[in-house]
Amino acid sequence: MVNLQGKTALVTGSTSGIGLGIAEALGRAGANIVLNGFGDVDAALATIAATGAQSAHHPADMRKPDEIEAMIAMARERFGTVDVLVNNAGIQHVAQVEDFPAQKWDDILAINLTSSFHTTRHVIPAMRARNWGRIVNIASVHGLVGSAGKSAYVAAKHGLVGLTKVTALETAGTGITCNAICPGFVLTPLVAAQIDAIAKRDGISMEAARARLLSDKQPSGQFVTPEQLGNLVLMLCSPFGDQVRGAAWAMDGGWTAQ
Ligand code: NAD
Image: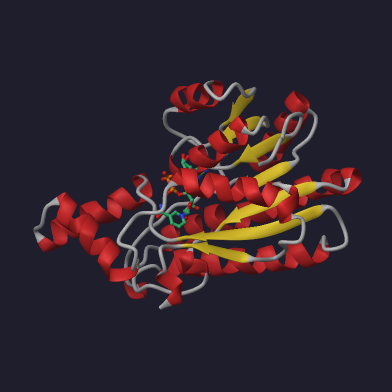
């Protein structure tokens, strides 16, 4: 569908889950891949190597603007430029507003929203110079609707959808597009923690907790997969995506259709 040979993609938070799935799809399409994130970096690099793509990893903490700048500089030094930016890094914390730890609020806003402002502002000038670029912000259904207990996450993701719209408008006359993808539940470590919490809270098995999580919100009763999200990113990177600008594209098993 899309040939990204000679192009470079930077995916934040790509050592696990959705980010790794998207990086894998971009690697299969021929792009050089810059990974970012914590945890098992070697396993993530091996996943990308298996696609045949060139890759590198930068450990920038998305809460730290100077480390974000250093990551973009490293990507440029290694591969020349960043043509595809996927802002994916994200964390979650679930608690009522009155109990929400202030530090968690700050971290969620920094990682899930502000880091995308920094990466975006650093990559746009070179994208303008080449008159081509793709910026894909991994928001969430929580960029479109709320859920109790997720104040910081919902605020950050609504903010990310807003940043997406403005970035799309500011680049509308160019070959750069910016869009958000709004997944429903995807079975990754981020959601596994929520399933674990439901199992403990309700005294039920992990399998029953998984079904309960989905039945509360996701009419399909099935998880979205990182592979499906990777293919949506590829479509946005293809010529078919040229006029998709400022969208908040749900892939959510029907969640936001209700
Ligand atoms: P995950 O926990 O599997 O992966 C998160 C990634 O972010 C990891 O690579 C981790 O190392 C990295 N990360 C965490 N803190 C970081 C920091 N300070 N600096 C740099 N990297 C950091 O989570 P996931 O489910 O794959 O989530 C990825 C994105 O998708 C997030 O933005 C999340 O909000 C969004 N999302 C997830 C779901 C879901 O159901 N899993 C649904 C909608 C949206």
